[in-house]
Image 1: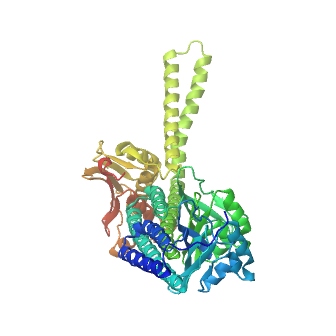
Image 2: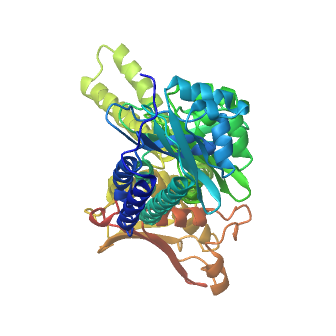
Image 3: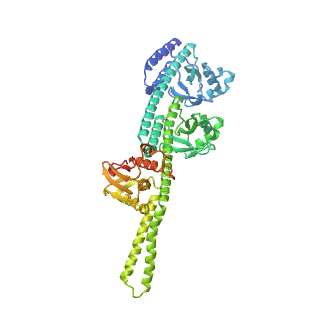
Amino acid sequence: MVPVPIAPAATPRDELQRFEQVLTEVATGFINIPAGEVDAAITRALARIADAVQAERITLLRTGEGGVVHVSHSASAEGVVPLAISLEPQCPWTLSELRQGRTTSFSHVDELPPEAVVDRAHWARIAVASNATVPIFVGGAFRGALAFATFRYHRRWSPEIIARMQLLATMLGNALEHERAQRELVTAMAFERLISQTLASLLRASPGESDALIEHGLGAMAQLLDADGVALWRTGSVRGEFLCTHRCQREGIHPAPDKVDGSMFPWMIGEILADRAVSRSVAAFPAAAAIDGATLRAMGGLSIVVVPLSIGPRVTGALSFASEREEQGWPESLLPRVRLFGEMIASVVARNHAEAAERDARAEAAHAARLGTMGVVAASLAHELTQPLAAILTNVQMAQVLVEDPDADRTELRATLDDILADDLRAGKLIQQLRRFLRRDELERSHLALSPLVDEVLSLVRGEVVGKGVDLRLSNHAPGAAVVANAAQIQQVLLNLLLNAFDALATNAPGTRHVVVSVHEEAPQVIIEVSDNGIGMDDAAQARAFVPFYTTKPKGMGLGLVISRSIAEEHGGQLTLCSTRGVGTRFRLALPTASNACP
């Protein structure tokens, strides 16, 4: 139907009065309105205003990401379809005028100037008869527009009506700004709580619990920001490479890839390495980000935020969150908090990696020390092995003779074979002890009875005891004492203390070299003491005994006691000493009993 002019239902003065009355009522309704009710209030207000000014459609447009103008609210008369598309790029002249603070209006599309040819075609295509659009500015910044349109008749927009439209636009703009500020404040406060709660949890957590807590924190952040997926990244060994360490996404959403690099996201990675955040929809990516946009679309992404994370002056990672269900726009004011949250988590991850590297280094040092210790007793161990092997050889030769003799005593043959078996078991037991002592399993801990563990160490030093003329005794065996520990590490500590005690006896006369090993319980601990009656240490030597690289031995490295104390502390125990010059030294290793050990 062709639009025709019609007589208004009331005089212009009556229309103006109705408009002003509705404006007053609407303005009153927006006073102290909660942020969650603003949208519904705007929709009701537009419907009432449309009826008051005989407009068949009123549309509120807002600027979004990148300044793109989009429809946020629309009210229409019966039979008129609400506007659901943006004015860009359909109305370039109109938008240019609005951004410069000028109202546009026409009672017929033919009134539009020649430079509005694209706009004229658009209005004609959707059958708009007349239109008035006023800009919305908040704080001096263009925030959108309010458009009034008719379809079934042409009408003129008086300066008085347009002035009231501008008043309404300002009021709606302020209401939306108030809503935005309230929502950002609520989100910011929730983000602050999330940061403090996550940090508190991570500080209390053991290294094994950190990953689960980090993923929980990322999931909470995604829910707070209404993001579909979130990922934490660290820089790889190659520049421009980022490796995903933690991720969280809604059900049915593509997970973040394990690795991204410059071939996939050249523009975004360049921005991140330059310490600049990226926050926009894929549709608003610049021309330089064509590859990035294509890659992100292939992964299902519509909007993304990537914030660089730094430790010191260097970018060490990134935190990203994205939307797949719809285009999203996240406020710029939120990015510093996102960065703080990401850098807090990244620092925890870096700390865990550093602690893991330190544990590996300590384990390597402990293993090297064990190898060095075995080097010290190698000759004695060789002797210990030679004895059963030599006995096996002799008994095998005897058995061969007995087998060849038809009159041989079978009882004697059986006894010879029994001796071979016993010597083989003796040699095998020693080899098994060596294998357990030397293998690398520093992280494995189990429930250990101390009695057999101590016996194994004493058997390893039997050759040293004999060779150096030491009287080695075991007192207070405490057969029921048990700990949760790494067997090889505890044996390493005990072996190191015994070898130190043997060395301290070097100046004692033969027959006066005594070492006593004592095992007893002092709840909630098990105590292992190694005492000698050697030369002892003065106060200065005792003060430095556990200092790295301090040693009184000509060929010592000064690491044995340092490593031994660190092993004790890693097991929740202590290693201490008490020494008197000329009297002797007592080392005391205290470990939690199995029932009191930390899990």
